[in-house]
View 1: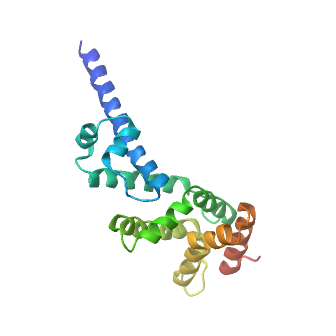
View 2 (view 1 turned 60 degrees about the vertical axis):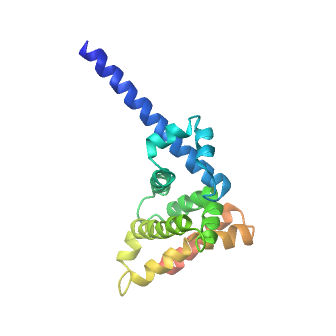
View 3 (view 1 turned 90 degrees about the vertical axis):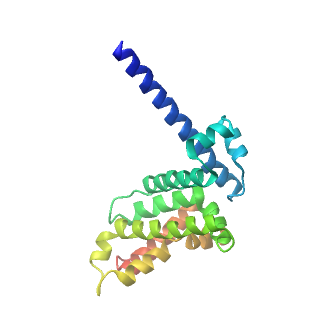
Length: 195
């Protein structure tokens, strides 16, 4: 009897967590699809296949939902951008893959940051996450930097920034392979690794 009850409770908890994840995923997808935070709870609920009441029961408010969405998106970005420390080609490959998926969205958020508080918060956190990524992925290059890692970190942040990707991929209309080649060459030149 006890085992049956535990199974039911575990199944309910899993169903609750799946519903919660489906709602958060819907919010993240809507934000990326609309390239803004200009959507309502009813939109999220409809996309997740739940009622607004269910959504509110899980998150309490729109802000609670958006905060959960930001945590989910940040965790996805962190996983997506993993590369072996010191491997410039792998780092460039993952950052370009990330920008291919969400670069235009990132640029839209940056454009809205001056007038939308949530976009400002997301972009500020994005800058921190990007800098942390640079210090992790390029740790061997930074450790060997003459005079310390500060200036080199700044240069590598710029070399791998979404705006650098935009200049090459969107403005110059280069292929992804060409963008990756140019970024590898730039990073190696900056870090003293050759061409």
